[in-house]
Amino acid sequence: MVNERFQFRQLHPNLSFGTASDRYAGWIGQIYPDSYEAEVTSRRKKLGGKSFEERIVPVSSTASYFRHFNVLEIDFTYYRPLVDVDGTETSSIRLIRSYLEHAPGDAKFLLKVPRLFFSRWLRATVGGKLQYVANKDYLSRDAYMRMFHEPAVSVLGGQLAGFVFEQEYQRKKDSPSSEDFVGELDDFFSKIGREAALHIELRSTHLLTEEYFDWLETCGIGHVFSHWTWLPPLRKQWQLSGGRMTSATNDAVVRLLTPLRTPYASAYAMAAPFDAVIPEIAESPQALRMIDDTAALAFQAIDKGKTLHIVANNRAWGNAPELARTVADRITDEMRRRAQERP
Image 1 (cartoon, rainbow, N blue to C red):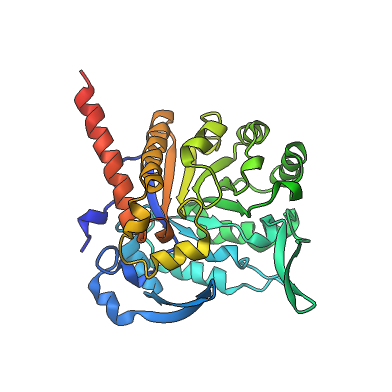
Image 2: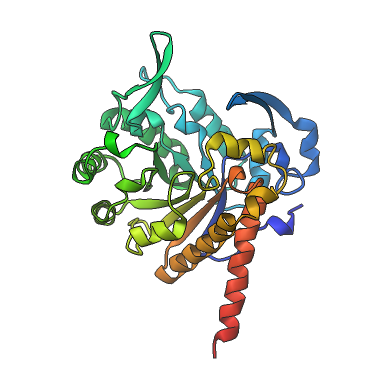
């Protein structure tokens, strides 16, 4: 039984709704039927000095998920490639196959690229202390293609909506110049496959330069409009882009991840267990602006004939399905208003 309050698949052919990860038991009664309550398992998560219980439903819930959403962002691939250095398949690729067993044929997946290939720095224990060290596999084309890109294309085929390359926040003093940064990206992206859309999410505002957006447009790579802790608001990112959606595959991605100026751990603690809207988050001026800005991006995509993947995260609202519903309602209201104004 589909809960009509959370039905997003038919809102508009140019709009694709989804979430960042899934299988949250807090979504039972919204996305997942009550029967899943008997199949919930738990695990512990330590974050910010606190311990949380994460309650999850089985992977078979994928069938219920896609009765509501068009796309799912898979984020566990960020932490581990699909194939190890020795060619052995990892648990990540096996889990993706499990998703496909339960997903309908028209289900689409966005895959986060492993940080191993797109993070300049990685955490490591050196001399008994946790430090950030230079990543020797940063922008390693051969390793990326062999350990992630090629197996992803092979397994998902036409159900692969695209790859999301997320790069961590970098201080300006630790970053290359805009020219050098674009140069190193070009050297990597000019040599990798284009079987699916490529989207980059930079988390350093000083790297969102005109030169960078010009390069994205030339290469046909999409900019991820990200509502994330230390990035400017979505509308400002749109201005920095020069009002462009740069992907050559005629789609774009907006990720609604965390409240602005709120670290990940704090946002997680406020939102857990992700089963309801958190007024402290959702009723803030910045959250209301996030909704308006996302709706504005949706109409820009429609006007430009592009598909916009709207990816909601629990931490940005308290509950991702409710966040998606709020965005959808805002878009629907604006559609009605525009229809009434037509002569």
